[in-house]
Structure formats: C-alpha cells, structure tokens
View 1: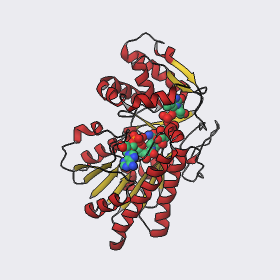
View 2: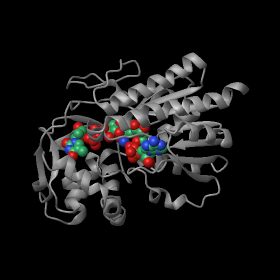
View 3: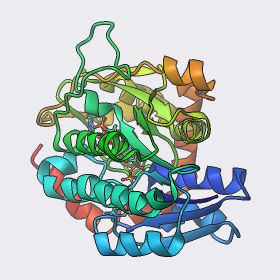
View 4: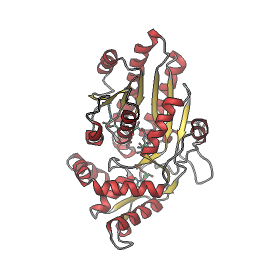
Length: 351
Ligand code: NAD
Ligand code: TDX
C-alpha cells in the first residue's frame, strides 16, 4: 500500500509518519509537506533513510501540483494532517487558514476522486484528521462533545477546519469517496512548536521569561499525548468504518492555570530549582479574542468500537515532554530563532 501523509513534517504528522514507517515496513509512506514555519524535517531525522519512506516538498493549495503528484504516484490512501494549526495566528491572518485548510483539502479530495473513481473506490481511503474545536465551546457543566454534537466553530482556525470537515463528508455523500474522519482534543509532547501553550511555557521557563496566561487562566482543555493520537489514527485508518467519524481525547481536562502550575513544578523538579521558583514567572495577560471556554471530548466510540485507549497518564506524558525539551535544546534554539522572534513580539508585546 502506498500512502500519502500530508503535514508529516509537523508536530502530530511526524509522529504519525514515524509510527507508520516503523510499524508497517511493507507500506510505502510519502510525506507531503510544504515546510512552513511549523514544518521541520529534523523531526524525522531518525527515519530519513528508511527504504519505505520518502519526503516530497509541496503546497496542498497548489492544485496543478497536487493533480500531477497524484497522477504520478497513484497513492492507495491519503492521511491528511497538513494545516495551519494555531488559533492565535488565525486571528491575525485568517486567509492563510482558508487557503491551506479549505482550498488545500478540496484540492486533495478532487485529486483522490479523479484518481480512484474510474477504477472503483475499493481498497482506497481518504482519512481527514481534524479537531474538537469544530464543536465550539462548552460551559463548566458535565457536557462533552460527541460525534453527534452540532458544529459551532468560533475562531477562524476552527471555522476553516469545520469547513474542511464538511467538504470531506460532501465528497463522500456526493461522489462516494471512501472517507474517514477523526476529531481530536489538544495534543502535547515532543516536537510541538513553541507557539502552543505547553511548549511555549517550557521554552519560556527554560530561558527565564514570563509565561503568559490568557485572561484568568480559567479556560479548560482536554490534553492527549501526541503518541497516543498517532496510535488512534492507526486504529481509525485500519479498523474504522468508512464514512464514519471518531472523537479522540485523553479524558484529561485541565484548567490552563492549574496546568501551568503543574508544569512549573515538573520543570523545577527536573532542573533542580527550588520548589515554587518557576511559578513566579506566571504572568496574566490580555485574553485571546473569542477565547473558547472549555473543550471536553467523549472518546467512548473509538474506545469501545476500535479498542483504542491512551497509553500514558498526563503526569507520565508531561514528564516525558519536559525531559525531551530539556534534552533537545538545539531543536528548541533552532525553531525559536529568526521569524519566531518577530511572531513573539507581535503576539505578546502589547498584551
Ligand atoms: P503543525 O502546525 O505542527 O504542522 C502542520 C504541518 O503542515 C507542517 O509541517 C506544515 O509545514 C504543513 N503545512 C502547512 N501548510 C501546508 C500546505 N499548504 N501544504 C503542505 N503542507 C502544509 O500542526 P499539528 O499540530 O501537527 O496538527 C496537524 C493536524 O492535526 C492539523 O490538521 C490540525 O488541525 C490537527 N489537530 C491538531 C491538534 C493539536 O493539538 N495540535 C489537535 C487536533 C487536531
Ligand atoms: O500563551 C498562551 N497562553 C494561554 O493562556 C497560549 C499560546 C495559549 N493560552 C491558552 C489558550 C488556550 O485556552 O492555553 C490554551 C491552549 O492554547 P493553544 O496551545 O494555543 O491551543 P488551542 O487554542 O486550545 O488549540 C489547540 O488544540 C486544538 C491546537 O493549537 C489546535 O491545532 C488543535 O486543533
């Protein structure tokens, strides 16, 4: 089987590529990635020479390029992760999200349909990886997002992902394209770009800079270790029903402030600083515009139907994550130089 995995040089994509390349030596894995600021081939240095792995640089929003790539490579399946993924960037530059997340997804759907439909769709899968943010925002009650929850996206990022999800389902209902979808909660772990809360906080604690907590830090997210998201994607790809959607989460809700306090304590312990040292760097800053209050995901469908479950507790995953960042200073230094400095100034200087 030949699979094109899009966005494989990014955070989650690199863990998915590594899992598929190492677990399925008979598959040919093509990692298609534009290498934006978030894409980094260093994430995959360890599997670079694997005989069943290839990297192709390209932009999914370039229709002619995508059509030509599909005609040349004739993939059996697509696992689509490439996206603009950061909510704060979507607030300042929404059009980049429309271009990659919406137009890019439709280009891939068209290319897959054109390639597969003439021979019949048997044996093919278009798997679209999405987010729980499409469901909107919950209050602090017991409610959770299920696969039946109505879409209610509220940021330009979640609107673009919701749109891409609708296009994927439309290609299934209208053209019969064999699709699968999953909507996952917040990931954390090694190789996470330090614009997102957990790696940003680790980077700032490491370098003695303030850790910005938006608003009062009351917002709640459900956190899942990235390697567990990769095993969930493996389960959905191989065992999920065509046409179906699977919610994926960690059953692990944390208020942002509590999470940052825990992270500060883990960093103090790992670096041998006195208890309470890192917490002094917590700084409350202006809230994110339209900040969703709570995400909580009901993962019972994937757990019951596909037998998937997270492999680590949050404490174990967080400890592994902090260890990775402390051991990979070079990676962190390389991604926080250059354009990252401008982004940081723009995002945080007026907060
Ligand atoms: P990321 O930003 O770390 O990586 C995105 C990758 O896509 C990068 O390698 C980038 O170079 C590539 N890319 C961007 N635009 C492209 C384009 N036009 N053409 C080709 N490649 C392009 O993102 P991530 O956090 O790894 O997220 C991956 C996917 O998972 C996204 O679809 C995201 O919506 C979804 N998701 C993320 C989370 C999370 O917590 N990070 C949770 C649920 C779902
Ligand atoms: O500096 C910060 N301070 C802060 O308080 C940052 C960057 C974030 N936050 C808050 C905002 C959120 O409530 O922390 C929470 C997590 O923020 P992010 O890491 O930016 O993630 P989020 O906005 O929840 O979206 C993430 O989860 C779903 C990913 O970025 C998406 O790609 C994914 O789809």
